[in-house]
Length: 311
Image (cartoon, rainbow, N blue to C red; front, side, top):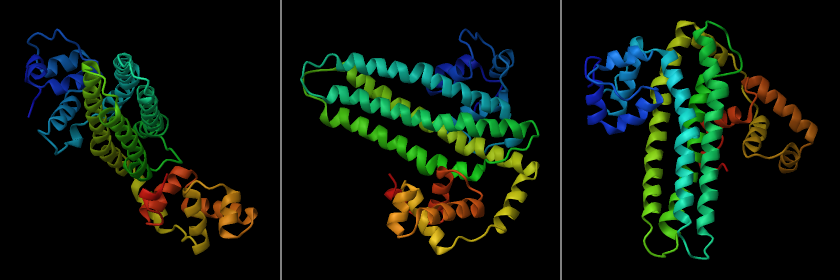
Protein backbone atom coordinates (compact mmCIF):
# COMPACT_ATOMS: atom_id res chain seq x y z
CA UNK A 1 0.00 0.00 0.00
CA UNK A 2 1.36 3.41 -0.94
CA UNK A 3 1.79 6.04 1.78
CA UNK A 4 2.39 9.77 1.89
CA UNK A 5 6.15 9.31 2.33
CA UNK A 6 6.62 7.31 -0.88
CA UNK A 7 8.18 9.15 -3.81
CA UNK A 8 5.69 10.43 -6.38
CA UNK A 9 8.13 9.65 -9.21
CA UNK A 10 8.40 6.05 -8.07
CA UNK A 11 4.62 5.75 -7.98
CA UNK A 12 4.36 7.06 -11.55
CA UNK A 13 7.10 4.73 -12.81
CA UNK A 14 5.86 1.61 -11.06
CA UNK A 15 2.13 2.06 -11.59
CA UNK A 16 1.28 3.32 -15.10
CA UNK A 17 -2.42 2.67 -14.42
CA UNK A 18 -2.27 5.57 -11.95
CA UNK A 19 -1.22 8.14 -14.55
CA UNK A 20 -4.79 8.92 -15.64
CA UNK A 21 -5.78 9.42 -12.02
CA UNK A 22 -2.85 11.80 -11.54
CA UNK A 23 -3.88 13.75 -14.64
CA UNK A 24 -7.41 14.21 -13.30
CA UNK A 25 -6.09 15.51 -10.02
CA UNK A 26 -4.17 18.08 -12.11
CA UNK A 27 -0.89 16.99 -10.56
CA UNK A 28 2.25 17.86 -12.56
CA UNK A 29 5.18 16.02 -14.06
CA UNK A 30 8.72 17.05 -13.13
CA UNK A 31 8.21 16.01 -9.50
CA UNK A 32 11.87 15.21 -8.82
CA UNK A 33 12.38 13.28 -5.59
CA UNK A 34 9.41 14.83 -3.80
CA UNK A 35 7.15 12.61 -1.74
CA UNK A 36 3.49 12.05 -2.54
CA UNK A 37 2.56 14.31 0.34
CA UNK A 38 4.86 17.12 -0.84
CA UNK A 39 3.46 17.04 -4.37
CA UNK A 40 -0.13 16.96 -3.11
CA UNK A 41 0.39 19.82 -0.67
CA UNK A 42 2.04 21.97 -3.34
CA UNK A 43 -1.00 21.46 -5.59
CA UNK A 44 -3.73 21.82 -2.94
CA UNK A 45 -4.76 18.16 -3.13
CA UNK A 46 -5.78 16.37 0.07
CA UNK A 47 -3.14 13.65 0.42
CA UNK A 48 -5.22 10.96 2.23
CA UNK A 49 -7.99 11.28 -0.38
CA UNK A 50 -5.48 10.97 -3.23
CA UNK A 51 -3.95 7.89 -1.61
CA UNK A 52 -7.39 6.38 -1.01
CA UNK A 53 -8.13 6.45 -4.73
CA UNK A 54 -4.63 5.27 -5.66
CA UNK A 55 -4.71 2.25 -3.35
CA UNK A 56 -8.32 1.42 -4.22
CA UNK A 57 -7.57 1.53 -7.95
CA UNK A 58 -4.57 -0.75 -7.47
CA UNK A 59 -6.65 -3.05 -5.22
CA UNK A 60 -4.14 -2.51 -2.44
CA UNK A 61 -6.69 -1.19 0.04
CA UNK A 62 -10.47 -1.63 -0.03
CA UNK A 63 -11.10 -0.78 3.61
CA UNK A 64 -11.86 2.92 3.23
CA UNK A 65 -11.09 5.21 6.17
CA UNK A 66 -13.85 7.77 5.71
CA UNK A 67 -12.63 9.83 8.65
CA UNK A 68 -9.54 10.73 6.62
CA UNK A 69 -11.46 11.37 3.41
CA UNK A 70 -12.07 14.89 2.11
CA UNK A 71 -15.42 15.03 0.32
CA UNK A 72 -14.61 18.38 -1.35
CA UNK A 73 -11.39 16.90 -2.76
CA UNK A 74 -13.19 13.78 -3.96
CA UNK A 75 -15.95 15.86 -5.54
CA UNK A 76 -13.41 18.05 -7.29
CA UNK A 77 -11.63 14.98 -8.66
CA UNK A 78 -14.87 13.51 -10.03
CA UNK A 79 -15.80 16.81 -11.70
CA UNK A 80 -12.34 17.05 -13.27
CA UNK A 81 -12.67 13.44 -14.43
CA UNK A 82 -15.94 14.29 -16.19
CA UNK A 83 -14.25 17.24 -17.85
CA UNK A 84 -11.26 15.10 -18.87
CA UNK A 85 -13.49 12.42 -20.42
CA UNK A 86 -15.33 14.90 -22.64
CA UNK A 87 -12.59 17.40 -23.42
CA UNK A 88 -9.79 14.90 -24.06
CA UNK A 89 -10.32 11.11 -23.83
CA UNK A 90 -13.49 10.69 -25.89
CA UNK A 91 -12.70 13.30 -28.59
CA UNK A 92 -9.23 11.80 -29.03
CA UNK A 93 -10.70 8.30 -29.35
CA UNK A 94 -13.25 9.52 -31.91
CA UNK A 95 -10.53 11.14 -34.03
CA UNK A 96 -8.52 7.93 -33.90
CA UNK A 97 -11.52 5.86 -35.03
CA UNK A 98 -12.20 8.23 -37.92
CA UNK A 99 -8.58 8.10 -39.03
CA UNK A 100 -8.59 4.30 -38.78
CA UNK A 101 -11.75 3.74 -40.84
CA UNK A 102 -10.54 6.17 -43.51
CA UNK A 103 -8.08 3.44 -44.48
CA UNK A 104 -11.03 1.28 -45.57
CA UNK A 105 -11.42 0.99 -49.33
CA UNK A 106 -14.59 -1.08 -49.03
CA UNK A 107 -18.07 0.11 -49.97
CA UNK A 108 -19.31 -1.35 -46.69
CA UNK A 109 -21.45 0.84 -44.43
CA UNK A 110 -19.76 -0.60 -41.35
CA UNK A 111 -17.15 2.19 -40.98
CA UNK A 112 -19.82 4.89 -40.76
CA UNK A 113 -21.88 2.73 -38.40
CA UNK A 114 -18.86 2.56 -36.10
CA UNK A 115 -18.84 6.34 -35.74
CA UNK A 116 -22.61 6.42 -35.23
CA UNK A 117 -22.46 3.75 -32.54
CA UNK A 118 -19.54 5.54 -30.89
CA UNK A 119 -21.51 8.79 -30.78
CA UNK A 120 -24.49 6.96 -29.26
CA UNK A 121 -22.14 5.47 -26.64
CA UNK A 122 -20.79 8.94 -25.82
CA UNK A 123 -24.34 10.29 -25.57
CA UNK A 124 -25.25 7.64 -22.98
CA UNK A 125 -22.18 8.57 -20.93
CA UNK A 126 -23.08 12.25 -21.27
CA UNK A 127 -26.61 11.67 -19.95
CA UNK A 128 -25.22 9.69 -17.04
CA UNK A 129 -22.68 12.32 -16.05
CA UNK A 130 -25.03 15.22 -16.68
CA UNK A 131 -27.37 13.77 -14.07
CA UNK A 132 -24.49 13.62 -11.61
CA UNK A 133 -23.38 17.17 -12.42
CA UNK A 134 -26.88 18.60 -12.08
CA UNK A 135 -28.31 16.46 -9.24
CA UNK A 136 -25.76 14.53 -7.19
CA UNK A 137 -22.92 17.04 -6.94
CA UNK A 138 -25.09 20.06 -6.02
CA UNK A 139 -26.83 17.91 -3.40
CA UNK A 140 -23.51 16.95 -1.80
CA UNK A 141 -22.30 20.54 -1.93
CA UNK A 142 -25.41 21.66 -0.06
CA UNK A 143 -24.83 18.95 2.53
CA UNK A 144 -21.27 20.12 3.00
CA UNK A 145 -22.56 23.67 3.47
CA UNK A 146 -25.08 22.46 6.05
CA UNK A 147 -28.02 23.35 3.84
CA UNK A 148 -31.17 21.31 3.33
CA UNK A 149 -31.94 20.01 -0.15
CA UNK A 150 -35.37 18.66 -1.06
CA UNK A 151 -36.24 16.44 -3.99
CA UNK A 152 -33.11 14.28 -4.09
CA UNK A 153 -32.81 10.82 -2.54
CA UNK A 154 -29.34 9.28 -2.45
CA UNK A 155 -30.74 5.75 -2.33
CA UNK A 156 -32.80 6.23 -5.49
CA UNK A 157 -29.70 7.66 -7.17
CA UNK A 158 -27.59 4.72 -5.99
CA UNK A 159 -29.99 2.18 -7.53
CA UNK A 160 -30.28 4.16 -10.74
CA UNK A 161 -26.51 4.55 -11.00
CA UNK A 162 -26.03 0.83 -11.58
CA UNK A 163 -29.43 -0.60 -12.42
CA UNK A 164 -30.35 1.64 -15.35
CA UNK A 165 -27.74 4.11 -16.62
CA UNK A 166 -24.70 1.86 -16.55
CA UNK A 167 -26.60 -0.97 -18.25
CA UNK A 168 -27.46 1.35 -21.13
CA UNK A 169 -23.82 2.43 -21.38
CA UNK A 170 -22.59 -1.16 -21.33
CA UNK A 171 -25.07 -2.17 -24.02
CA UNK A 172 -23.96 0.63 -26.33
CA UNK A 173 -20.31 -0.28 -25.86
CA UNK A 174 -20.99 -3.97 -26.53
CA UNK A 175 -22.71 -3.06 -29.82
CA UNK A 176 -19.74 -0.92 -30.83
CA UNK A 177 -17.10 -3.53 -29.99
CA UNK A 178 -19.04 -6.27 -31.78
CA UNK A 179 -19.35 -4.09 -34.85
CA UNK A 180 -15.57 -3.66 -35.02
CA UNK A 181 -14.53 -7.17 -33.99
CA UNK A 182 -17.15 -9.23 -35.81
CA UNK A 183 -18.20 -7.24 -38.86
CA UNK A 184 -15.46 -4.84 -39.96
CA UNK A 185 -14.56 -5.53 -43.64
CA UNK A 186 -11.51 -7.73 -44.13
CA UNK A 187 -9.46 -5.50 -46.36
CA UNK A 188 -5.94 -6.09 -45.12
CA UNK A 189 -4.08 -4.92 -42.06
CA UNK A 190 -5.37 -1.99 -40.04
CA UNK A 191 -3.04 -1.43 -37.12
CA UNK A 192 -4.61 1.92 -36.31
CA UNK A 193 -8.05 0.35 -35.84
CA UNK A 194 -6.57 -2.31 -33.58
CA UNK A 195 -4.96 0.50 -31.57
CA UNK A 196 -8.28 2.37 -31.39
CA UNK A 197 -10.01 -0.83 -30.23
CA UNK A 198 -7.40 -1.25 -27.51
CA UNK A 199 -7.98 2.37 -26.44
CA UNK A 200 -11.71 1.64 -26.31
CA UNK A 201 -11.16 -1.28 -23.95
CA UNK A 202 -8.86 0.85 -21.80
CA UNK A 203 -11.45 3.64 -21.67
CA UNK A 204 -14.07 1.11 -20.59
CA UNK A 205 -11.87 0.09 -17.66
CA UNK A 206 -11.29 3.73 -16.72
CA UNK A 207 -15.00 4.48 -16.84
CA UNK A 208 -15.82 1.42 -14.73
CA UNK A 209 -13.26 2.47 -12.14
CA UNK A 210 -14.72 5.98 -12.14
CA UNK A 211 -18.16 4.52 -11.38
CA UNK A 212 -16.62 2.36 -8.66
CA UNK A 213 -15.14 5.46 -7.05
CA UNK A 214 -18.65 6.91 -6.93
CA UNK A 215 -20.40 3.73 -5.77
CA UNK A 216 -17.83 2.47 -3.26
CA UNK A 217 -16.29 5.70 -1.95
CA UNK A 218 -18.44 8.75 -2.69
CA UNK A 219 -21.91 7.34 -1.93
CA UNK A 220 -20.93 5.75 1.42
CA UNK A 221 -19.24 9.03 2.38
CA UNK A 222 -22.42 10.93 1.51
CA UNK A 223 -24.50 8.52 3.58
CA UNK A 224 -22.22 9.13 6.55
CA UNK A 225 -22.63 12.87 6.10
CA UNK A 226 -26.40 12.49 5.88
CA UNK A 227 -26.37 10.44 9.08
CA UNK A 228 -24.34 13.11 10.84
CA UNK A 229 -26.93 15.67 9.81
CA UNK A 230 -29.77 13.30 10.77
CA UNK A 231 -31.18 13.05 7.25
CA UNK A 232 -31.33 9.25 7.13
CA UNK A 233 -33.46 8.89 10.30
CA UNK A 234 -35.95 11.37 8.80
CA UNK A 235 -36.04 9.38 5.56
CA UNK A 236 -36.59 6.12 7.45
CA UNK A 237 -39.49 7.59 9.40
CA UNK A 238 -40.92 9.04 6.21
CA UNK A 239 -40.67 5.67 4.46
CA UNK A 240 -42.45 3.91 7.31
CA UNK A 241 -45.34 6.37 6.97
CA UNK A 242 -45.48 5.92 3.20
CA UNK A 243 -48.91 4.96 1.89
CA UNK A 244 -49.32 1.69 0.04
CA UNK A 245 -50.18 1.75 -3.65
CA UNK A 246 -53.44 0.20 -4.70
CA UNK A 247 -53.39 -2.62 -7.24
CA UNK A 248 -54.70 -0.30 -9.95
CA UNK A 249 -52.04 2.28 -9.10
CA UNK A 250 -49.41 -0.44 -9.45
CA UNK A 251 -50.83 -1.30 -12.87
CA UNK A 252 -50.56 2.35 -13.93
CA UNK A 253 -47.02 2.61 -12.52
CA UNK A 254 -45.90 -0.41 -14.55
CA UNK A 255 -47.21 1.16 -17.75
CA UNK A 256 -45.56 4.50 -16.91
CA UNK A 257 -42.22 2.74 -16.43
CA UNK A 258 -42.67 1.08 -19.83
CA UNK A 259 -42.76 4.57 -21.35
CA UNK A 260 -46.42 4.64 -22.35
CA UNK A 261 -48.27 7.95 -22.70
CA UNK A 262 -51.40 8.72 -20.67
CA UNK A 263 -53.59 7.83 -23.65
CA UNK A 264 -51.74 4.56 -24.24
CA UNK A 265 -52.09 3.65 -20.56
CA UNK A 266 -55.80 4.45 -20.67
CA UNK A 267 -56.27 2.23 -23.72
CA UNK A 268 -54.23 -0.61 -22.22
CA UNK A 269 -56.08 -0.60 -18.89
CA UNK A 270 -59.55 0.32 -20.29
CA UNK A 271 -59.84 3.45 -18.17
CA UNK A 272 -60.19 7.14 -18.99
CA UNK A 273 -57.26 9.51 -19.43
CA UNK A 274 -58.62 11.53 -16.51
CA UNK A 275 -58.42 8.41 -14.32
CA UNK A 276 -54.84 7.76 -15.46
CA UNK A 277 -53.82 11.31 -14.55
CA UNK A 278 -55.52 10.97 -11.17
CA UNK A 279 -53.69 7.69 -10.47
CA UNK A 280 -50.37 9.20 -11.49
CA UNK A 281 -50.85 12.12 -9.10
CA UNK A 282 -51.69 9.69 -6.28
CA UNK A 283 -48.64 7.55 -7.06
CA UNK A 284 -46.30 10.56 -6.93
CA UNK A 285 -47.93 11.80 -3.72
CA UNK A 286 -47.80 8.46 -1.95
CA UNK A 287 -44.23 7.63 -2.94
CA UNK A 288 -42.97 11.23 -2.91
CA UNK A 289 -41.29 10.45 -6.24
CA UNK A 290 -41.89 12.91 -9.05
CA UNK A 291 -39.65 11.73 -11.89
CA UNK A 292 -39.99 8.81 -14.30
CA UNK A 293 -36.44 7.74 -13.44
CA UNK A 294 -37.31 7.62 -9.75
CA UNK A 295 -40.50 5.68 -10.41
CA UNK A 296 -38.51 3.25 -12.57
CA UNK A 297 -36.11 2.54 -9.73
CA UNK A 298 -39.00 2.10 -7.28
CA UNK A 299 -40.66 -0.39 -9.64
CA UNK A 300 -37.42 -2.34 -10.13
CA UNK A 301 -36.55 -2.45 -6.42
CA UNK A 302 -40.07 -3.57 -5.50
CA UNK A 303 -40.15 -6.26 -8.22
CA UNK A 304 -43.00 -4.67 -10.16
CA UNK A 305 -40.99 -4.79 -13.39
CA UNK A 306 -38.01 -6.75 -14.67
CA UNK A 307 -35.10 -4.51 -15.67
CA UNK A 308 -34.35 -6.83 -18.59
CA UNK A 309 -37.73 -6.03 -20.11
CA UNK A 310 -37.20 -2.27 -20.06
CA UNK A 311 -36.14 -0.53 -23.24
